[in-house]
Length: 479
Ligand code: ATP
Image 1 (cartoon, rainbow, N blue to C red):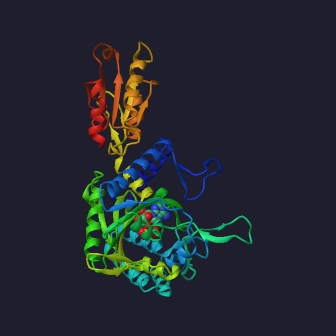
Image 2: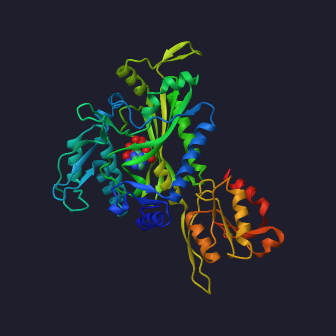
Image 3: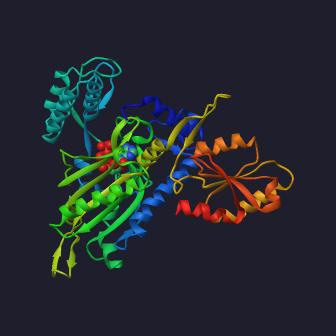
């Protein structure tokens, strides 16, 4: 799908209107690139996180999870290279004062070229940009921007500053008295919490290589160009796994994890053609191979997950800075070594955006007699915030009591929702809009034969089923 801004805006509005995502501190006009998850958004996010966690830890005997603190000793970030290297080349427009990440500015220009049929020119531009980024050639990048007459989207001029580096880490003070306080960083990735605990986990868990350590949690980056809703935020959540391997085996394991992670993505029910791999030309300071899994968002193909062959860079560097050995004794080959690492790193918020983009449908249900439409989130049932809505047809005649009994029987097993207000059709539509896969209606026949009408979200088909079979019907779809 090419850039579909209208659809993207519709998804953003839908997320707000139906309690998925709100701008942070909205009563004070919000905070740029920071968002809060509402009642249904937090459920969906939790379900995605749980699904990742289960598939990476519970279903694998050689991967365990940890939950490290956000604050870490400041030397961690010196050792990891973030103090010196975690910066992006930026350029400012002198007239509008707007600051751009250089790669984003050039990529946006390439998108425009492509949209006007100049695909070859766009590809050549991107190839040249990759070459200059890889060579850290800042004057060359500036020249490229000027030669191609790339303009500021706000002021419309090409009056650019030099290209400069800008560190993305947030810092704060630890300690109550200013003189005693030391500067620390909010972690820009969760991975380092795994590296510094590598030996703790390996020893206490008696882990044998190859093995992995997984973690989910918040990360913070002072992104300059933080637009595009939850795609790029300043506070976001990552789901990362570091897989420790014998040096020399990184190529095979890199391919293995590329494949495993793609299978995970496909298990979300998203078709293959909506994904692609993008190999990195400019490798990060720690990597000997790296690629992204990109998804075709309404704003175009963009990264959701990174897979990186990180060599022994991090452990070796922590060994140097901490003077603590980061070695593993491999009994199979009778050797000590610093393990190599393959990392899989996926953003929870970007996965959320991907899943909701895929699920969002505007359906025209008009017939010859009347105009009708609905917005439905066709979320995979295992991820839907609510699994079963229980709706008594009326508020009287003992129907609410039966509905409440159905709630009580099912709510210990999965998230249920009770609602008796408004006409049944309206209630169905509200459940469609938040992606509830099953609605059951309790009516007068229920009193006679203990059956209810179950309505399936995607097909809108209805059938009568016995009350006692409901749990099974839902369980089959969500397990
Ligand atoms: P980008 O090139 O888009 O800035 P990145 O390559 O810096 O991303 P990584 O450092 O590889 O990203 O982080 C792993 C994952 O974390 C990304 O694939 C993405 O899903 C997520 N992520 C990174 N930065 C952000 C952000 N600012 N907001 C939301 N998610 C993010």
